[in-house]
Amino acid sequence: MKFLDLTKVYIRSGAGGNGCVSFRREKYIEYGGPDGGDGGKGGSVWAEVTDGLNTLIDFRYQQHFFAKNGQSGMGRQRTGKDGDDIVLRVPVGTEIMDEDQETVLADLTVVGERVLLAKGGNGGFGNLHFKSATNQAPRRANPGQEGVERTIWLRLKLIADAGLLGLPNAGKSTFLSATSNARPKIADYPFTTLHPNLGVVGIDNTEFVVADIPGLIAGAHEGKGIGDRFLGHVERCAVLLHLVDGTSDTVVEDYQTIIGELEAYGGVLATKTRITALNKVDAIDPEERDEKRAALEQAVGGPVMMMSGVSREGLNEVLRAVRAEIDDDRVRMKPAEEEAPWRP
Image 1: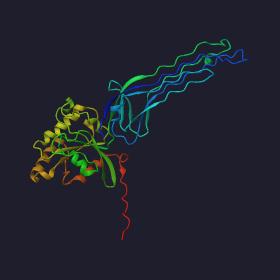
Image 2 (image 1 turned 90 degrees about the vertical axis):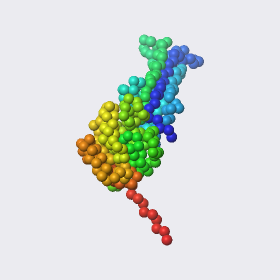
Image 3 (image 1 turned 45 degrees about the horizontal axis):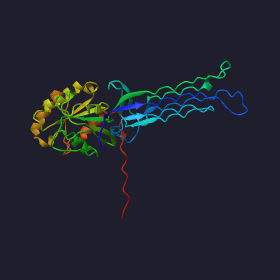
Image 4 (image 1 turned 60 degrees about the vertical axis):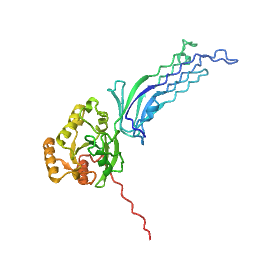
């Protein structure tokens, strides 16, 4: 399934049905009086969070959602039928923004959450509604209320507990593959990852979700490379794991490049809790490893962990450090493994 995290949608609620002007006409009834019914209510447009979705690809093939109009009222005091509602089914973590892409109308983070996007128009009153002692034969009825037409943007921000950051080929996809059942594409060239990947990571009988986003390069906030469009997927994370390629000759510059892009992006990412790890340490000599770690710790202003996604060196220590920064209410207990049945 193709990944899509931003799309424009055109919606319109249904108009209310018109009221009816009608009079009762039956044999042997001289003064039947008004009996025009009210118009039906127009359908509304809703957005609802549905479990099992992780992309907005369905809105690539259908961008227009128009609710049904209400039916007009009829004689014999019959009210028109209400128009059917339309429900936009979106994945967890979807933001609904106005046409300016800045005003957030709703932030849907819980399965089953529902929000009204465009309310249907009310139906008009029939002439029966205007009957009174002084106006026993009204010949007026109200038209139905017009529907609401608007353009909205849907933006998906993945729900993850931890996010991976780093330059292209820093080993993020290898880390996710080594610690979870996710199987992202891994290759020895930059920009192997073209869309975010999610993986469930388990450590010490607990599980949490890790998001791997495409690598950043210098100038990403200006649109270079894939750009910073995927940084929104780690805004909801409790902690960021910053991987630095240990085989690079410029580990400090690589670290500062990512930090500069986070600060240029703005928001909460620049101040979010980060854990820095020197990756691919199995491919460098012990002396070089210590030198790069010392230089990186000086730039970070704190400890730097050592790990390798290929040899799995230091993986558990990094996972425990990440888990320690995640609130207990965000993680879940790892399901107990069932014992295999006895066989002769």
